[in-house]
Length: 158
Image 1 (spheres, rainbow, N blue to C red):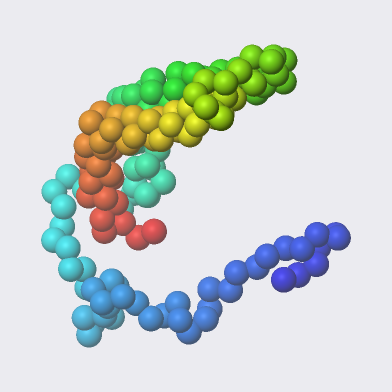
Image 2 (cartoon, one colour):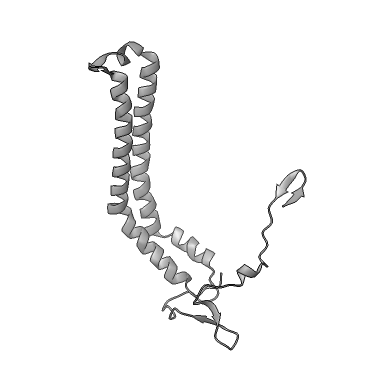
């Protein structure tokens, strides 16, 4: 690390010998000094004028990407608001109405304990609902976008 004006700057060295060790099939030389590609050329792949950044920007501006993000926000925003309201109601009630929270429900279990357990239950239910929503509504379109992006970026020098 170097010191610059009282702050530490992190520098990364890319000339280490372990950077030269490539994974099998990635950029290996074919004896003529050119890299060998395991993947066949992709029809419709971008020409050398496109960079990976251009492709990712294009995907980000696509309608399919916007739809995946829209589906994500339609679930997450209301679920987060509902959970925060439920949590804050529990905290405010515990502070503002201790008599209500101390009322027994069953044996030694009072309203505060039941509501606290309800917080845990709500967390697990919300996690299950999020995973189900992602699996049914977002995973397939997101995976299709990922594969399209991988196909478009294959063969581009990054």
